[in-house]
Amino acid sequence: MQNAFESLVNLLESYRGRDKVIRTLCYGSQLVGGVISQKTANTSQLGKSLLLFSAQLSHCRTVLRLFDDLSMVAYSWGYGLGAAEEDKVIRWMSVLSNIADQLYYPCEHVAWAADTGLIKVRSDKWWTLSTLLWGLSLLLGTLRSLRIILTLRRKALKRRQVAPYNDRQDGMINTADIQRRIHGEVLSVLGSLADLSNAIHWMPPGFLWAGRFPHWLVGLMGTTSSLIGMVPICSSDQSASL
Image (cartoon, rainbow, N blue to C red; front, side):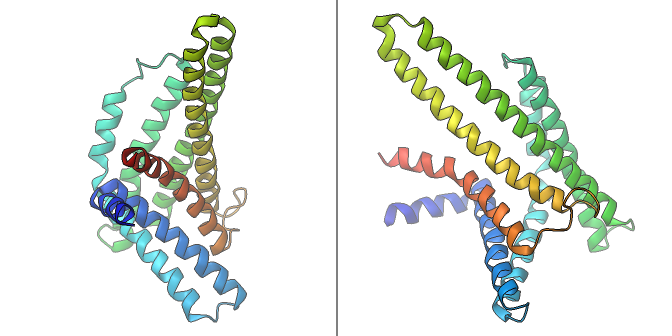
């Protein structure tokens, strides 16, 4: 119990960790509030309160992202053109994803500033553009993870075929490491697809299933991707406690 409490405190003390917790609470509240509201035909005060709480947490994350631009610049600058990547396809998908992420932030900032009345422009077009960039980044991330999974599977198969008998134990260790990386990429794909489904929902009406998700389904998709995003943190905490 004490270790779990200390892990939660450490998580909340970091910006990225706090954002993950807020995100999980945001979508979890929307999921539960949406289910309650649907069952009670929007007459439950609890359901309305949970949806309002979710909206406030979402607004909180939007304001906090005002300070993410420089972090994204540093990451994109460090990655550059991905010279360290062996696979050219993975490299250019990563570069394009970084560009989409970098452009996302200023577009969202303009939309937020327009909603708050700081600038006199229409916010709807900027929200649409930021959502489009987010969706593009998610799509590229999904394709990148699928490419990595395919590459890792080929690498594992090749190692099993060419490893001499005396190196079989080392080969098994390497294969186990590759399998862990594959599992991580599979989770990344599932999380990205869950977020992508919500990104499409928030696009203008007429685009695929835009605007058709009820609150609980948006909450379910977001909660799923949020919990998947928490897996690496929980895994690292468990490894540190061993």
